[in-house]
Each structure stands twice: as C-alpha cells, then as structure tokens.
Length: 222
Image (cartoon, rainbow, N blue to C red; front, side):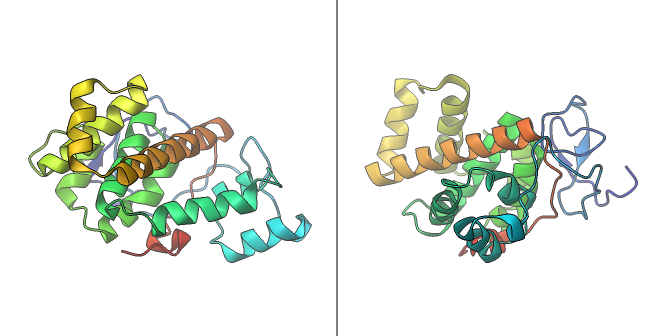
C-alpha cells in the first residue's frame, strides 16, 4: 500500500489490491488523490482496442478519455456510442444543480461500495463546489452532517432510499418535490440509475482503477 499518499477520506471497503469491485476491509482509510497502483493487466472482460473496433465504436473511444470503463463498455458495440452521448448529456446538460448531481453520484458510489466510481467523481464534485467536509462526510456515511444544506440532505436522503429501498417513503418524496421541479426529479433519478449501473459494471468486471480524470472525463462544465 506504499503508493497511497495524503490519506484523508474514510471510505468503506477498499480492498488491499485496488479494483473496481466491492472489497472486504471496512476499516480502511484512503484518499482518492493518488496515482493509482496497477494490480493486474485485465478485467474479467476484455478492454476493447479502438484499432480493432467497428467504426462507430472506434470513433466514440477516440473522442473520449482513455478510461478502462469506456473500453469495457465498448464491448456492447451497438449500444456504446449512444451510451457515451447519454453519459455526457447527464454530466453537461441538465437543469439539476451540478453539485446536487455530484453528491448524489458519490452517495451511490459509497452505498455501492465501489472504488472506481468514487475515484473519478470526487474531483468532479470538488470542481462544482463540494468541500473537504462534504467529501469526508460522504465517505463516512454521514449524510446528515452540518456541512450539507437542508436541500442537499434531502437529495442525499432520497438517493439513499432509491438505492436501498427502490421506493422512498412519502415524506421524502414530498420533501424532494417541494425542492425540485418535475424535470429535476426525473434527471436526478436518471443520474442515480446511471451510476448504479456504472457501479455494478465496475464491480462485476473488476476493472483496473484509472487515475482520476476530473471534469475532463466528459467535457464536464463546472
């Protein structure tokens, strides 16, 4: 573990050999601002080589940053180019406040116990206004912490209940719909669903964790 520096964030379940999936040591402390150590050469599924891919897939990969997640998703040849456009739209063109979007994504990552998603989205969250206190609280499962505004706590509670229970209770739904427009509620659900899927793909395929790319990952606007 000697390659990890500046350890500040308490997160559940980061395995001793870093991978995309769920881990077993629930007391580990880590910081996501590191050069990630490579532990293996391949995930459980092959990484698509753009040179060997059909033209639409090759073009989509060449237009994106070289993330292992994209190269695994590219195995779904017909769906991949449209999925890339969909992912970019969720991070660049919503009415939903970017900070609410990013704390929801980090909450999904924490609940799903998947390193890959957190590593990429911590710097994006910071770029749209997440503070050290927010990052620490999310890593510690403290969504009611004072560093969050009442509105942010509602979004975090809603996200938690969607991930854990599918259907949030009426009081949570009422609080959220008083805060967000119907468009924003649906966008939040789209974000939660997208990142639940991403977490599960990363876990099932046991991806090698890329260095964090920050807001450049989809051309994200702060």
